[in-house]
Length: 511
Image (tube, rainbow, N blue to C red; front, side, top):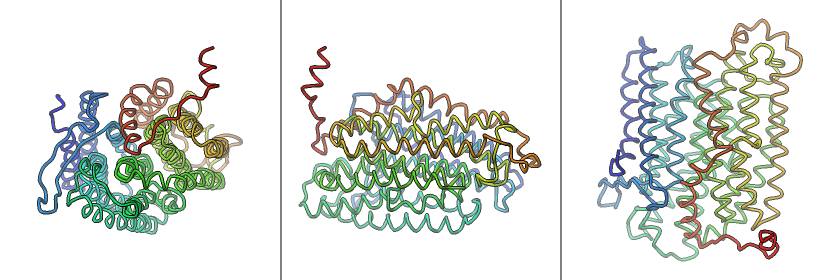
């Protein structure tokens, strides 16, 4: 396929059509609905691969641009375009959704709800997630940003576990409040921007300092809630703990990245001076989030809530990378977005497999489970090591880039953030120890599910994620080459350049 093919509009529309097809299938044919949903998501993955191959590294900043009139009187268009940051996130979505569908094969079987509706909601969620990363019109982005809440709300509220309705409402209200802040900022941007929502046009406008700061805050609050950053994080442990494991993997692995993506795509290029003004505050929130969430993760007895808290800590690292304003840290932040999606996606899916077998998410209900399900315990251990950024796994590369890129411009922040690595080792290793190691919990021997190790379907789910985490841990160049030009352009928008090497560094290099 050539670069002229309408990749982004087709990628956005295809899951929507698939969702309609699956939703209309009779409840009496659940297996057919599952197979159709899986096949449809695999077709989207194939199309995403073709788009990746067609992307020109070093070419135009925004590629695959399409624009179709929507509301001409308001200057609203269906405008799609992707830079390197959007491209890697679209690839992550296309990869994770079929794996989540396969991992969730039996999640809705015992529910009183319709199985076809469950898988239709997953496809609808894929449509909205692709749309939010592909949009190059601010109003279109806002629409996808809000509509994305609907399928996840029903996935949590209708198919989730304990306290699912409370968690779903809390998730929806938090995100909706953030969306209202952004709506006010979107309207203000339209007024000062000459009645246009086109992203490229809006990057060229000038505005007063006060206006820019207020508009920046409107967007930033919405993105900080979505990510979430401290202190807007309290909805995530509830949502992640109540959601089905596959839905939680998409929630934490992809949906939350809309917040950090939005900061990179909208806050920094559209409001460069306000971004620099707010950077010290954002760095403070990010560092607090790293330490605070890690400490809370250590004390959790619920596996899914524990993984949710680890994600809040990881988002702190991403926030540090973004607001350090260096290309190394920025590239590391975007790479962290991808690698976190792979590592935490794997961790959530494996935890879901454990919870489904035991019938409980409480760490105290396990103990020595590795003696009964050694392969599953091994995959959990690997996923935990990747989550704590062990050298040789993909998250290590991104975390290293964030810290080294930050250290060159802000040593205190980098040093404090490094403490998060030690805490990560504590909460991951203790979780693995209490769950799969040590003396076998006698109660596990009588649980039927704990006698089954990973089956073929589950091995197909975890194998691609393990391979990618190892491959990108040793050779991240294919991804960083795509990310780098977009980050360099973003830093130029903000008016930031990398610090020059010190005299000592130059002398050392000369030796």
